[in-house]
Image (cartoon, rainbow, N blue to C red; front, top):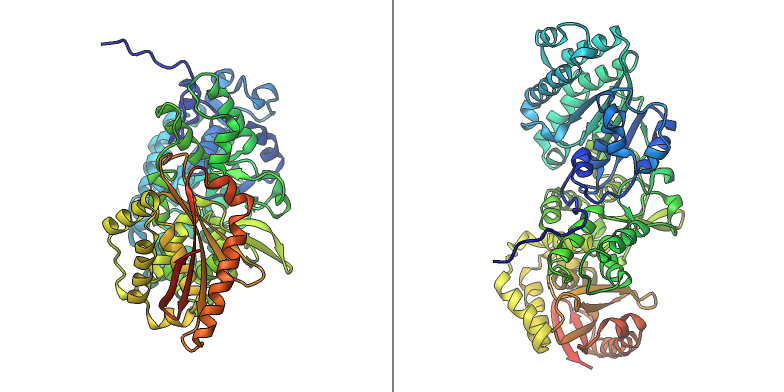
Length: 584
């Protein structure tokens, strides 16, 4: 047996959130320490939200190690070769760091106090042990005589004040329990009790606010949505929300320059089957295009850092081959937690479904809110903001005086189309995964498009509710997009036709993953109402033929089809029936 020789390269820190371990184990680290002086110049009570799995926890961990008085002797090892190692600030290693991670709180809302007390007691006791020689004698023993998180927090910051010690408070995932609450009326009532009036959570944040007059000198609070903090406003109204600030647009996530630099490094230490440019072209449609500040639109866009690390790790492990699945399972699991979006979207009138409008129009407009009460989540602007903060929308300029928002990339598009299918679940929609997979494979490798689009038409007709049928064209187009998005061999591209208001669907072949597939498709989809004459169907068919031919001549299609045979498919629906499905 040959001796295994470990690769001489930096480890990919996929899934790692402990900054000290990443540095100790010589992992590849994208230097974000240049933002530390900017954070210090900002208001001392810093509130910042970004989508899940974007690198927030690692940023918090990095800041903890930078400011921790106990990490002073490790400063060079942790930061010496980074920006902040060369340009340290006055406040480095000068705080007692108190870190609370609300995702570590066990329990539902009905016993949230018990979970919060348990988490805080463990954290506070650990704080006392770590900083024992910085605190008054027997701080730990006296802490244990206090009842619950609110009393213990007050005791702790007063003890620090007596010996002139400063606390930097970090709260990660402050909104962790909110998602489960938004979709349940009874939980919403309990949630309101906890965050309003004399609720325990509100009392806890009130105590943090009181501590800022004492030894809590700085706070850094992160989460995904600005719902809870808005409900806690009078309990903690001193924080400044920097989530939409152009100054911090690039603080979390990777810029394309940072991704290129990473790929260039690994290209010198590992086997690469592609150039850096080719890999960027492969990754960009899936992971890029996040913009977190209106003023930054048209400039730098951000990649989802977790997805980039997932791709690079798999590419290196597969000896220079792209992963067969461009979406990691953990992302799917995270997005599954957002199913309440569909339930909330259904609360809008059927002709005002925000997700349906987004898919068919290609964009939606609204005002991004810095905070909103949970009880007002179904306000349309609030709901649009919620989609944005979850990372399901990105800023794409302005339209008629409002912010224009679009789906950022294919990872999110796949999830939204999946949710769209969920909205059609009223008739117990239950597709056979085996059947879908067989049809998808036949479409990609044998060119059997009749069976594939026939299956979609059959499902659409069988599972359409009366309300769905009233949506007409929007429903048919959205359903077709949602179904094609389930096909693992293609990336569906839908481009709005500004002349007719319809959209072509280009099933772009994923040749980097399935290099031996043989067929690609343009689908021109048209819709006639039940009451329209047959002549209207024929008229739409000719329009579709013309548009399919025109779209086939675009550079987008020519560059993407590669060695596959391109099929131009014309589909015309008349109500929920499909009288036309032919190749041109």
